[in-house]
Image (tube, rainbow, N blue to C red):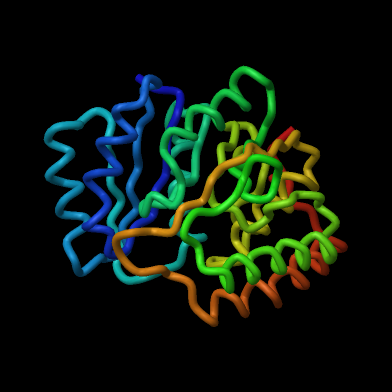
Length: 247
């Protein structure tokens, strides 16, 4: 049994998935993995099924039809985790831009240090990039400044996608009110956690550009981020993210 579930959405990650699964399962803490595959035509899901024969009690798969968006994948994963015994739920990319070794540091921040949310941050001292194009770094930095200017959430890396949530955070947030599915999803989840008073820490990580596969960034995702931040802040004046049945 494990208290930790790592959720990894995939689309065409055949070149990374086996290496990622084996790396996570090699860590000294017994993490479980939930892969959520959006109908990858390259056979990603088939490879996961093959690996499940070796890791039957630790590796799980949700298959979906078509590209339904990063946010909906994570929401599906959160609901799956909450239906089970997991106390710490992680978001992570499959392409090794997030170093799996850092799962241990995020876990420690929540389990040992008492934080509710631990964010793998590129923009706190000690964080940074390897092999990321300068234009992408500039875009990401400007997006972070923009998000903080509009929302005042005081998170240096609000678009980060390497995160550990304590179970109580996801139990408290009304997941039906998380509206965004792309770039803005990460922002909205952090905004909700901050508005609900949870303790958040940013842990420095080194973000590494993928070596295998293709980036999923698009103009529509960027557009959603820009307009979505305004909508997130506007909506917060009229409603709360707290689930009605939560304390």
